[in-house]
Image (cartoon, rainbow, N blue to C red; front, side, top):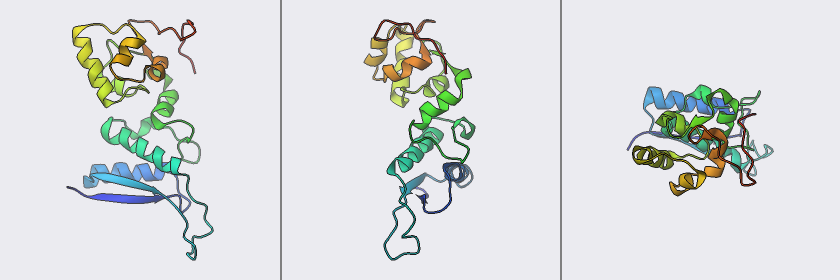
Length: 179
């Protein structure tokens, strides 16, 4: 049990930064259990019937960012917003955060902390825990070994090294870390 709230996103002149700032405050100060986001849909005959509907993808991106803040331990300052305070609809918030903080990458999969691994696109909570368990027994040396642990290795590869080396691309080319 616990308190929850819901934001209707996009019915007014608002931005993602405002919603997530409020969510962080609600989680921290009021111990709110969960914030829900709903994309605005105008109703015929209402004062807002002429306001365009909010794309469902915006709602989805807010849920993704909220998840990063609540469950992945991200700090609000790690999220990437444009000049208007909105997140990209083209990239998920974890990828956008990684691209906006290139100084944090690449991460060495065999030595990185749990917190560092959680910031790598393609690595989820369960995948990171599997990596940490596997590292106790052996070194992780290849993308197939990562894939066997249930991670999206093709996504993660651009942000990781395996024993100090980038994994070769499918075409056999060595990747270089650059943005």
